[in-house]
Amino acid sequence: MADVATATPKSLTSAPLASPKLVRNKSTLPASTGGCINASFGCNHIEEFHKAGENSFKTLRERYEEIIQVIRDKHPIVLQTCLNTKNVAITVLRPTFLCVQCPFIYSEEARKSHLDVKKHSFCCKVVNSRNGTLYCSNCEDYVYDPLFETIRLDNGRKRKFDEFSEDSRSVPPNSTHVPCRAIGLRGLYNMGNTCFMSAVIQSLLHNPLVKSFFLTDGHKTGELCEHDNCLSCSLDEIFTEFFSLEKTEGYGAVTLLMNSWKTAEAQNSELAGYKQQDAHEYMQFLINALHVTNGSLTSDCHCFFHETFYGCLRSDVICDKCNNKTTTDDPFLDLSLDLRTSQLKKKLNGENSKGAANESSMRLEECLKYYTSKEKLAAVDYTCKKCATQGVSTKQFTLLQLPPVLSIHLKRFSHLKDKSSKVTTPVKFPLVLDMMPYTTLYHSPETFTETSSSTTNGKTNGTTSDSSTGYSALLSQPREHWSPKLLSYDLATVIVHKGEMNSGHYVNYSREGKQWFLFDDSKVVLATEAEVLRAEAYILTYVVSDVGKWVAEDEGDGDD
Image 1 (cartoon, rainbow, N blue to C red):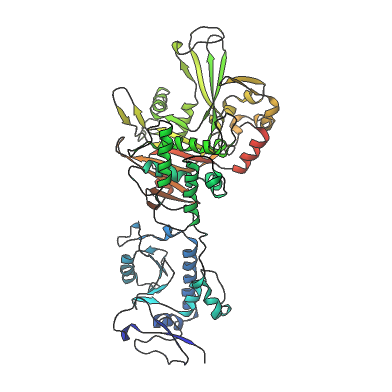
Image 2: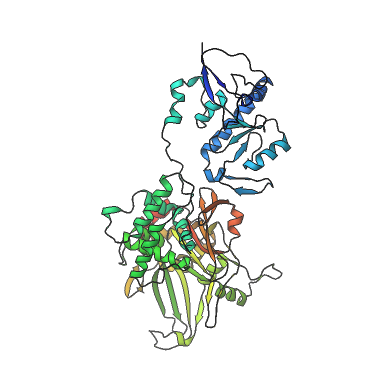
């Protein structure tokens, strides 16, 4: 006769069991009575659903299949975020439970109170988020039903029950799990005032372009690397750890910290040591070090980090007396926006809206507008090379070339002669940023239509009409008709400084797919867009929306 799986009832054991003990019996057993369990079902409560009608049992099975699919698709961090006894969302390390009827995840403590209060028809069955096993509140134990076990071991793939043989059922528990879902959602241990480093590392880990570089062997490590104390090798090690192993516990970036100290000491930098450092300074230090270990210090470097993070800033100074124009182009790694200066310009222009709830607040677009607006230079600050006189002049910054990854630094630390303080001005920033209004193309389109020459760090940089043919169709239209999607950037990460100037703490908000996460040293929790947009940003990282279009235009024109 066919084998029948039975379970030893809890009432017949001398001590409670964590799970039923499965045995094999060659004979068919009669239907269970009292505390015994029917051989065809995990428990008599599941059997009750089957007797209630085909629709009831079908609904139970379909809901269980959906939950198993969720467990397979979602990252463990998502499933560990649950409701506690006060219905407040928290992140826990113990197993959580997905209700078979309610679309909520509960902690182990909240599970019992939820089932007792709601008494939903399907809430007596709750699924463990770690392995998908079914828990019966009436039995107060996990139940192992043949049908539901088949669904669970199949990892959520919908297949017919009769497709499984005894051999195929033994494959899942005896096969090696492939960590295909490792997406880098791990924290970094604080090794003594290293939160500044953790925040910067998380920004790079969740930058899609940087991630692609390191995960495709962009940097040659080991014996192939010619650099001592190489920070690229150290970061490559972290990428390998985060994206090849499906772990949720924190990681100690010891190698990167030690090599940062050694590199900083060689450069006579103050970044070495256990004291708290500025995240902006460390980010510049780290990206420059990655640039050196993957390219060169020459002006014509085309390494990945130079092409990805560095842009070109144009400075135009016009003499008010003879209209002579002096142009200088300089590379930039990030845009540092002075919040105090932006506030002053906003006030002088009378742009504070009357009756506003907070007139001191700023928008990121306003800061960029004031950064690229014209300003008067005093006579003592400028001497015209053409008329050789000191006089009032007009200066303007514009962005000649934008990088694919745009970092914006908001100057929140003010250093005056008598004291230093933190600027707490609220700055509202968008999820999608249009950078076209701040470019040289927008302010001086003639640069791309006429032959011109400018002095760039002592060298002549010519821009001819031949190199700007790609802009002809755009420049034939009025600027107000230009699409904002031409140079749109998506927000990728936000670094926040909390607390006072000398005793603060850095955290990081990063986007992975369509979800936002808060990285606070070794702690990683889900975050909402509203929470991210309310943050007191210190460093914002934007990634160009259409990378493919960007690369094609860069290869075709050579100018931005």
